[in-house]
Amino acid sequence: MIKLRLYLRLLRLLAVIALGTLMAAVISLIERMVKHDLMSTRQRLTRWFMARLSAALPFSIKVSGERPETPMMWVSNHISWTDIPLLGMLAPLSFLSKAEVRSWPVAGWLAQKAGTLFIRRGAGDSTVLNQQLSRHLQQSRNLLMFPEGTTTDGQAVRTFHGRLLSSAIDTSVALQPVAIRYLRNGERDEIAPFIGDDDMLSHLLRLFHSDVAQVEIQLLKPIESSNLNRNALARQAQAAISAALFGASVEPVVDNSELEAA
Figure 1 (cartoon, rainbow, N blue to C red):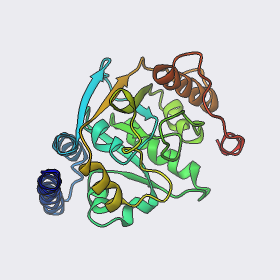
Figure 2 (spheres, rainbow, N blue to C red):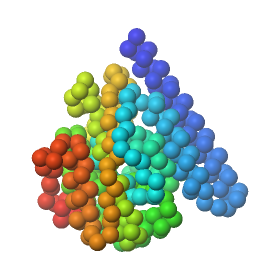
Figure 3 (cartoon, rainbow, N blue to C red):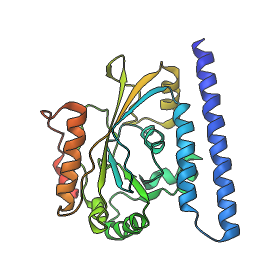
Figure 4 (tube, rainbow, N blue to C red):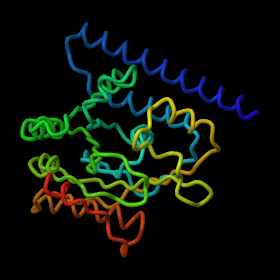
């Protein structure tokens, strides 16, 4: 029965991915025909796709807090690749992702077609990238990034990089902090985190072989970007998410090298 459940889950996932691939191909064809960027349409379809993808994952999802009525820069702690569909189903979003994702089979192509903005680690092009992010925000489009710069096991919130938050300040766009955590039988889930030497296939099989886990997503109070520098904005967002996950008395993990990079 366990193997049957695994196979059924995988079949459902493949069906959803096939549907998403077909949708992306159709939109790409239409864009070439009309010679016009249909980003708003892509964002709405991506949200619809993310909702179907989330439903195909072995999670029971609870969302709390108010969804923003105006476009914002969303910032969240980062635990797994599953954060992306789980958060992407909440609003029409574009994502900021590491450049390596672009080369992933199928997933990279879908991410690109969904309007994902890719960044190279340590490429030294933060000014150019911030200009690109600013243009995106000026067009009243939501953008989501993971300022930790990596996934974690969910035990703490790592230092938020502030350098890519300049675009929110430059465009006077508020931050929407989001806290996400995975629980299994009331305790921190050790299966959901995608960290270290994990590869996608092994993690996917391990996840789909397990029982349903609980995911809690908290949409926190927005943070105005005006009158704050990028590091202060990063610290405030990090503190809000850490407090939501672990309580105000818990100090977030600080990596000095990351702080200097921010």
